[in-house]
Length: 533
Image (cartoon, rainbow, N blue to C red; front, side):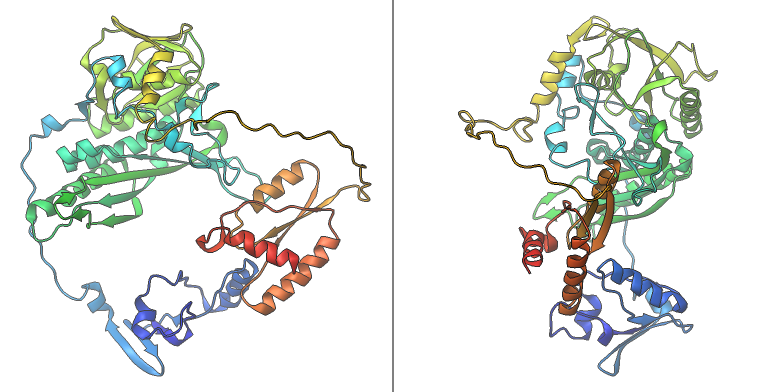
């Protein structure tokens, strides 16, 4: 690769060649295109108000060359780059552990319904989740909380693929994540393996085929220094994640890692978060809230081998395709937590078939609890699928002699983090009442059989497709117009074109979006200045 650093445009003057080469603050992305496509690519970028220009060329010679102000300031062989400059060695020490004590089945820290509902592990995160707008893009298939009470949390995010208005599709993607910091701290190898397993299980519980899943891994560990024990933690975790990838045929495509999680004598716990994603049709998505009283509830749980785990997921998918799965939950902190959270959304109760025992409060990586539309007996000859109870009309959860109302469990569950992430805004006194007398205004005449809507796209706008789609559903004609502000000339030409298009339209629609350049009100300032000009 030969790079012309003089061709690189910069936000700040005075940067030398080295700074141009290594700066991470210039907000750049590199794209390799064939020479015959370069002109068309640059034109397409410009149409979206993006700068694109050539700065380098791929060469046959295996060297990375950088030129600045007429001089070659870097010339490195590919062989040298492949070595990262020097051969490095590190000592790694992984403690010898009894793998039987670190099985997929581990106590989740609770012994009854109330202690489980009020535990930090099972606590509701609704106050945190609802700080984010799940509807951006107008492609959401599932909401963060489901059921008529909107209290059953979704374990995955499903969204339609973003397409232009008029090109709607039922093709969606489903994404889920998993990480148990306690398990990772106790045994990084098993914790990472289970993170991958659980993230894929959540996709399966949403109706996806595990064979189509891909992963991305996010790792965060303490500073490793020259300590073999510290090096052993990410080493073991990555080996565990790799074994799970091999067992399930799920490749990790990219990720992010940091080995700097230390401050003085404080270290972050070993952290490996597995994100899993798979394609799915919107109509095939399963949501986790119980749907109807009188339905049997089954557990899909193999004995721990990867082969049986794949078979259990395949059996679940087979039943789903036959229309027999009404709701599903990938078990994390025990079966009791699963049925509790599945009951919240529609206030449908549950009665277990067995006594209240530790098995109900044991984490089960890869297991899925499902509400079925009918009894199916032991659904597989290997015995990894069996009935554990049934849904009931009364809003109560009963496991053996332990019983609690859904309202009580929900109250306990939402109270744990209420002070940290409140779900209600306190109101002091009464809101002022505005005195707005009624008034009338003449109804304007519309001189067009199909009004035209002009939707300008300013820097920071991100909802133009949603706005156009909504307007089209209302029977309006839409035009999306990108405002180009790369230069004073571009702004002037955009303003003239905008004025012309506005005269041809009956409605001006300003869609939402984030402020440009992360400056408070940045995009709003530009929009008002543009419209006033």
